Image 1 (tube, rainbow, N blue to C red):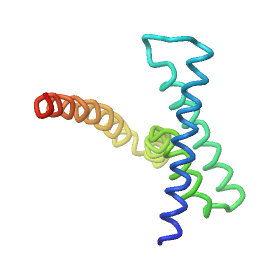
Image 2: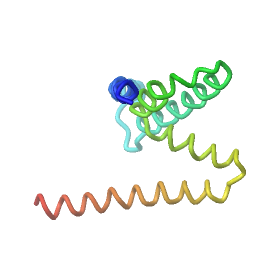
Image 3: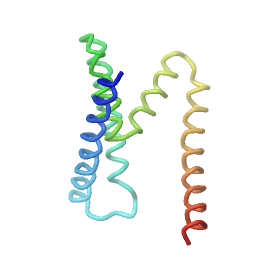
Length: 126
């Protein structure tokens, strides 16, 4: 348990650092944008990498790398990759209605949660 925790934590630190560097690289390529192109790019890249990792692990029987690579590195790089994986897993199981609800609730409630946190923070810390 503790070894897995440390593996996830180290992978998460690496993924977060890569997210920062990746975001900087996108901004250097595109210049400042009003649209969050860096975040969008990281989310798409992370989701594509998650798909590659899942397929590779399934083909090679290397599920043991999941905590470090998928939960840690890719989770630190973008939690959107885990969200995308869960959505596709629902779709592949034939639960497209649940997948749609999961997407709507995840996006809607997360944005709502951020707005609530901003409002509370502005009230409390003003």
